[in-house]
Image (tube, rainbow, N blue to C red):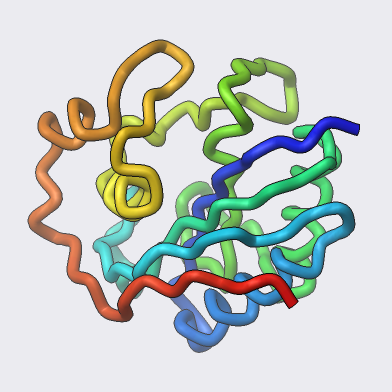
Length: 169
């Protein structure tokens, strides 16, 4: 099995969002054949979609994994379920949202998974924490994170907790 790098977007806006994010970081480090190498600062952002919900806490994790993209997606969705994720409406409130943003420099498009994440280039709450972890990162299409950020209004983002770097246990 090949060792790959994957970047995961984390978000939560109900039932103790900070706690859900912290627990998710610990759980990501415990996934089979996977280690969480870095975690970004936590950011508060306004919700995408319906505005009648609380602000989100967002972050990004860098994982080193031997799982395939779909096997990793299965693990992420299982973690969401462990956190009581209920999908009542599109872009609605959630206890935990885990998005597979990037997987090495692969481009995938299946009915279950699109990598790079289809909307990440439009979301400051993804790009700012991602740039914090890998400032010179290029997407598989060659675009640099800083180029994408220059096109976005990120004035609604507020850093609420500083970056943490995990050490292997």
